[in-house]
Image 1 (cartoon, rainbow, N blue to C red):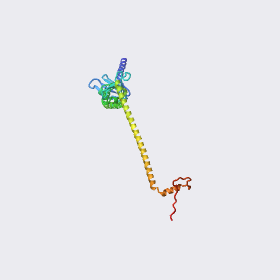
Image 2: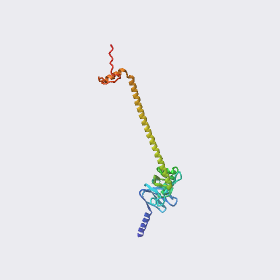
Image 3: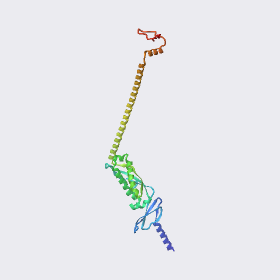
Image 4: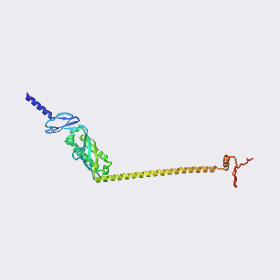
Length: 286
Protein backbone atom coordinates (compact mmCIF):
# COMPACT_ATOMS: atom_id res chain seq x y z
CA UNK A 1 0.00 0.00 0.00
CA UNK A 2 2.86 2.35 0.84
CA UNK A 3 4.48 1.47 -2.45
CA UNK A 4 1.27 2.34 -4.30
CA UNK A 5 1.05 5.66 -2.44
CA UNK A 6 4.63 6.52 -3.35
CA UNK A 7 4.00 5.61 -6.97
CA UNK A 8 0.94 7.85 -6.92
CA UNK A 9 2.94 10.78 -5.57
CA UNK A 10 5.62 10.23 -8.17
CA UNK A 11 3.01 10.06 -10.92
CA UNK A 12 1.37 13.26 -9.64
CA UNK A 13 4.73 15.03 -9.58
CA UNK A 14 5.42 13.95 -13.13
CA UNK A 15 1.99 15.15 -14.24
CA UNK A 16 2.44 18.51 -12.56
CA UNK A 17 5.90 18.86 -14.01
CA UNK A 18 4.58 18.10 -17.48
CA UNK A 19 1.83 20.74 -17.16
CA UNK A 20 2.54 24.13 -18.69
CA UNK A 21 0.64 27.27 -17.80
CA UNK A 22 -0.72 29.72 -20.33
CA UNK A 23 -1.01 33.02 -18.45
CA UNK A 24 -3.89 35.50 -18.84
CA UNK A 25 -3.36 37.80 -21.82
CA UNK A 26 -1.52 35.13 -23.76
CA UNK A 27 -2.36 32.24 -26.08
CA UNK A 28 -0.44 29.05 -26.67
CA UNK A 29 0.55 27.00 -29.71
CA UNK A 30 1.24 23.29 -29.25
CA UNK A 31 4.06 21.79 -31.34
CA UNK A 32 4.64 18.06 -31.94
CA UNK A 33 8.35 17.39 -32.14
CA UNK A 34 8.47 13.89 -33.64
CA UNK A 35 6.40 11.34 -35.48
CA UNK A 36 4.05 11.55 -38.41
CA UNK A 37 2.11 14.44 -36.85
CA UNK A 38 5.11 16.58 -36.00
CA UNK A 39 4.71 20.28 -36.54
CA UNK A 40 2.42 23.05 -35.35
CA UNK A 41 -1.08 22.07 -34.35
CA UNK A 42 -3.89 24.20 -35.70
CA UNK A 43 -5.46 24.51 -32.27
CA UNK A 44 -4.58 27.66 -30.32
CA UNK A 45 -5.15 27.34 -26.58
CA UNK A 46 -6.16 30.10 -24.19
CA UNK A 47 -5.17 30.77 -20.56
CA UNK A 48 -4.94 27.71 -18.32
CA UNK A 49 -2.78 24.65 -17.56
CA UNK A 50 -2.09 22.07 -20.25
CA UNK A 51 -0.45 18.65 -20.37
CA UNK A 52 2.67 18.76 -22.50
CA UNK A 53 3.94 15.32 -23.43
CA UNK A 54 7.58 14.40 -23.98
CA UNK A 55 6.99 14.78 -27.72
CA UNK A 56 5.48 18.27 -27.43
CA UNK A 57 6.33 21.90 -26.78
CA UNK A 58 3.99 24.74 -25.90
CA UNK A 59 4.92 28.20 -27.18
CA UNK A 60 3.07 31.18 -25.77
CA UNK A 61 2.40 34.55 -27.37
CA UNK A 62 1.12 37.64 -25.52
CA UNK A 63 -1.95 39.23 -27.12
CA UNK A 64 -1.71 42.56 -25.27
CA UNK A 65 0.13 45.54 -26.77
CA UNK A 66 3.89 45.13 -27.12
CA UNK A 67 6.55 47.82 -27.29
CA UNK A 68 10.15 47.19 -28.40
CA UNK A 69 13.01 49.57 -29.06
CA UNK A 70 16.20 49.25 -31.09
CA UNK A 71 18.81 51.65 -29.75
CA UNK A 72 22.55 52.18 -29.56
CA UNK A 73 22.42 52.58 -25.78
CA UNK A 74 23.17 49.56 -23.61
CA UNK A 75 20.69 50.88 -21.03
CA UNK A 76 17.61 50.85 -23.25
CA UNK A 77 16.31 47.77 -25.04
CA UNK A 78 19.04 45.23 -25.76
CA UNK A 79 22.53 45.74 -24.25
CA UNK A 80 23.82 45.36 -27.81
CA UNK A 81 23.84 48.14 -30.38
CA UNK A 82 20.59 47.63 -32.31
CA UNK A 83 20.36 51.09 -33.86
CA UNK A 84 19.60 51.23 -37.59
CA UNK A 85 21.68 52.90 -40.29
CA UNK A 86 20.30 53.97 -43.68
CA UNK A 87 21.18 56.41 -46.48
CA UNK A 88 19.67 59.51 -48.06
CA UNK A 89 19.36 60.15 -51.80
CA UNK A 90 22.85 61.71 -51.72
CA UNK A 91 24.27 58.55 -50.17
CA UNK A 92 24.77 60.18 -46.76
CA UNK A 93 24.67 57.68 -43.88
CA UNK A 94 22.14 58.33 -41.12
CA UNK A 95 21.94 56.39 -37.87
CA UNK A 96 19.02 56.42 -35.47
CA UNK A 97 17.13 54.69 -32.66
CA UNK A 98 13.64 53.42 -33.34
CA UNK A 99 10.72 51.78 -31.58
CA UNK A 100 7.67 49.74 -32.54
CA UNK A 101 4.30 49.21 -30.86
CA UNK A 102 2.10 46.32 -32.01
CA UNK A 103 -0.35 43.58 -31.05
CA UNK A 104 -0.63 39.93 -32.04
CA UNK A 105 -3.83 38.71 -33.67
CA UNK A 106 -4.81 35.68 -31.51
CA UNK A 107 -6.57 34.10 -34.49
CA UNK A 108 -3.32 33.98 -36.48
CA UNK A 109 -0.85 32.87 -33.83
CA UNK A 110 -0.57 29.39 -35.38
CA UNK A 111 0.28 30.87 -38.82
CA UNK A 112 2.73 33.29 -37.20
CA UNK A 113 4.67 30.49 -35.52
CA UNK A 114 4.54 28.28 -38.61
CA UNK A 115 6.08 31.06 -40.71
CA UNK A 116 8.90 32.10 -38.39
CA UNK A 117 9.32 29.16 -35.96
CA UNK A 118 10.39 31.68 -33.32
CA UNK A 119 9.02 33.26 -30.16
CA UNK A 120 7.73 36.82 -30.27
CA UNK A 121 10.95 38.42 -28.97
CA UNK A 122 12.98 36.72 -31.68
CA UNK A 123 10.41 37.66 -34.33
CA UNK A 124 10.60 41.30 -33.20
CA UNK A 125 14.40 41.42 -33.16
CA UNK A 126 14.61 39.55 -36.46
CA UNK A 127 11.91 39.83 -39.16
CA UNK A 128 10.21 42.96 -37.80
CA UNK A 129 13.47 44.88 -37.34
CA UNK A 130 14.62 43.80 -40.81
CA UNK A 131 11.40 45.14 -42.31
CA UNK A 132 11.83 48.46 -40.51
CA UNK A 133 15.43 48.74 -41.71
CA UNK A 134 14.48 47.89 -45.31
CA UNK A 135 11.59 50.37 -45.26
CA UNK A 136 13.89 53.09 -43.92
CA UNK A 137 16.43 52.37 -46.65
CA UNK A 138 13.80 52.39 -49.40
CA UNK A 139 11.98 55.52 -48.23
CA UNK A 140 15.06 57.58 -47.32
CA UNK A 141 16.74 56.81 -50.65
CA UNK A 142 14.28 59.21 -52.34
CA UNK A 143 14.71 62.05 -49.82
CA UNK A 144 17.41 64.67 -49.40
CA UNK A 145 19.50 64.69 -46.24
CA UNK A 146 18.29 68.20 -45.37
CA UNK A 147 14.67 67.09 -45.59
CA UNK A 148 15.23 63.97 -43.48
CA UNK A 149 17.23 65.84 -40.85
CA UNK A 150 14.80 68.78 -40.89
CA UNK A 151 11.05 68.77 -41.36
CA UNK A 152 10.81 65.44 -43.21
CA UNK A 153 11.16 63.13 -40.20
CA UNK A 154 7.42 62.67 -39.76
CA UNK A 155 6.96 61.99 -43.47
CA UNK A 156 9.72 59.37 -43.41
CA UNK A 157 8.29 57.56 -40.38
CA UNK A 158 4.79 57.50 -41.86
CA UNK A 159 6.15 55.84 -45.00
CA UNK A 160 8.07 53.26 -42.98
CA UNK A 161 5.10 52.58 -40.74
CA UNK A 162 2.80 52.01 -43.71
CA UNK A 163 5.17 49.59 -45.45
CA UNK A 164 5.85 47.50 -42.33
CA UNK A 165 2.17 47.47 -41.36
CA UNK A 166 1.13 46.09 -44.74
CA UNK A 167 3.90 43.47 -44.70
CA UNK A 168 3.19 42.13 -41.19
CA UNK A 169 -0.62 42.23 -41.14
CA UNK A 170 -1.09 38.93 -43.06
CA UNK A 171 1.28 37.24 -40.59
CA UNK A 172 -0.79 38.17 -37.55
CA UNK A 173 1.20 41.16 -36.24
CA UNK A 174 -0.84 44.37 -36.20
CA UNK A 175 1.52 47.35 -36.23
CA UNK A 176 0.20 50.27 -34.22
CA UNK A 177 3.13 52.68 -34.53
CA UNK A 178 6.76 52.87 -35.60
CA UNK A 179 8.57 55.89 -34.22
CA UNK A 180 11.94 57.58 -34.02
CA UNK A 181 13.69 57.96 -30.65
CA UNK A 182 15.79 61.08 -30.10
CA UNK A 183 17.62 62.72 -33.00
CA UNK A 184 19.26 61.20 -36.05
CA UNK A 185 23.01 60.79 -35.83
CA UNK A 186 25.08 62.20 -38.70
CA UNK A 187 28.81 63.00 -39.08
CA UNK A 188 29.62 66.38 -37.51
CA UNK A 189 30.67 67.93 -40.82
CA UNK A 190 27.38 66.85 -42.39
CA UNK A 191 25.37 68.29 -39.51
CA UNK A 192 27.24 71.60 -39.83
CA UNK A 193 26.69 71.70 -43.60
CA UNK A 194 23.00 70.87 -43.26
CA UNK A 195 22.49 73.45 -40.50
CA UNK A 196 24.25 76.11 -42.61
CA UNK A 197 22.06 75.25 -45.58
CA UNK A 198 18.92 75.40 -43.46
CA UNK A 199 20.02 78.74 -42.00
CA UNK A 200 20.71 80.13 -45.49
CA UNK A 201 17.32 78.96 -46.71
CA UNK A 202 15.59 80.54 -43.72
CA UNK A 203 17.50 83.80 -44.24
CA UNK A 204 16.59 83.89 -47.91
CA UNK A 205 12.97 83.26 -47.00
CA UNK A 206 13.11 86.06 -44.46
CA UNK A 207 14.52 88.47 -47.05
CA UNK A 208 11.84 87.42 -49.52
CA UNK A 209 9.17 88.07 -46.90
CA UNK A 210 10.68 91.48 -46.13
CA UNK A 211 10.73 92.31 -49.84
CA UNK A 212 7.10 91.34 -50.18
CA UNK A 213 6.24 93.50 -47.17
CA UNK A 214 8.14 96.45 -48.68
CA UNK A 215 6.38 95.98 -52.02
CA UNK A 216 3.03 95.80 -50.27
CA UNK A 217 3.81 98.96 -48.28
CA UNK A 218 4.91 100.78 -51.45
CA UNK A 219 1.71 99.77 -53.22
CA UNK A 220 -0.23 100.99 -50.22
CA UNK A 221 1.56 104.38 -50.33
CA UNK A 222 0.98 104.72 -54.09
CA UNK A 223 -2.67 103.82 -53.70
CA UNK A 224 -3.03 106.40 -50.93
CA UNK A 225 -1.34 109.11 -53.05
CA UNK A 226 -3.50 108.23 -56.05
CA UNK A 227 -6.57 108.42 -53.86
CA UNK A 228 -5.59 111.83 -52.51
CA UNK A 229 -4.79 113.11 -56.01
CA UNK A 230 -8.12 111.90 -57.32
CA UNK A 231 -9.85 113.51 -54.36
CA UNK A 232 -8.13 116.86 -54.97
CA UNK A 233 -8.88 116.66 -58.68
CA UNK A 234 -12.50 115.95 -57.95
CA UNK A 235 -12.67 118.94 -55.58
CA UNK A 236 -10.92 121.21 -58.13
CA UNK A 237 -13.27 120.09 -60.90
CA UNK A 238 -16.23 120.69 -58.63
CA UNK A 239 -14.97 124.20 -57.75
CA UNK A 240 -14.33 124.98 -61.41
CA UNK A 241 -17.80 123.88 -62.39
CA UNK A 242 -19.27 125.94 -59.54
CA UNK A 243 -17.31 129.05 -60.61
CA UNK A 244 -18.31 128.56 -64.21
CA UNK A 245 -21.92 128.28 -63.18
CA UNK A 246 -21.63 131.47 -61.13
CA UNK A 247 -19.97 133.30 -64.03
CA UNK A 248 -22.73 132.27 -66.38
CA UNK A 249 -25.43 133.43 -63.98
CA UNK A 250 -23.68 136.65 -62.87
CA UNK A 251 -25.57 139.70 -64.34
CA UNK A 252 -25.63 143.44 -63.57
CA UNK A 253 -29.06 143.11 -62.03
CA UNK A 254 -27.82 140.28 -59.73
CA UNK A 255 -24.80 142.36 -58.64
CA UNK A 256 -27.08 145.36 -57.97
CA UNK A 257 -29.42 143.17 -55.95
CA UNK A 258 -26.59 141.69 -53.85
CA UNK A 259 -25.23 145.19 -53.15
CA UNK A 260 -28.62 146.38 -51.98
CA UNK A 261 -28.94 143.39 -49.68
CA UNK A 262 -25.58 144.14 -48.02
CA UNK A 263 -25.85 148.03 -47.87
CA UNK A 264 -26.47 149.51 -44.40
CA UNK A 265 -27.90 152.78 -45.77
CA UNK A 266 -24.88 154.96 -45.05
CA UNK A 267 -22.55 156.62 -47.50
CA UNK A 268 -18.76 156.54 -47.09
CA UNK A 269 -17.41 159.44 -45.04
CA UNK A 270 -14.11 159.54 -46.91
CA UNK A 271 -13.82 159.26 -50.63
CA UNK A 272 -10.95 159.40 -53.06
CA UNK A 273 -10.62 160.81 -56.49
CA UNK A 274 -12.08 157.73 -58.10
CA UNK A 275 -15.69 157.06 -58.75
CA UNK A 276 -17.90 156.67 -55.72
CA UNK A 277 -19.26 153.21 -55.48
CA UNK A 278 -22.94 153.53 -54.93
CA UNK A 279 -26.09 151.82 -55.77
CA UNK A 280 -27.65 153.12 -58.94
CA UNK A 281 -31.37 153.42 -58.72
CA UNK A 282 -32.99 153.46 -62.05
CA UNK A 283 -36.19 155.51 -62.19
CA UNK A 284 -39.18 153.47 -62.96
CA UNK A 285 -40.24 153.55 -66.52
CA UNK A 286 -43.45 155.45 -67.16
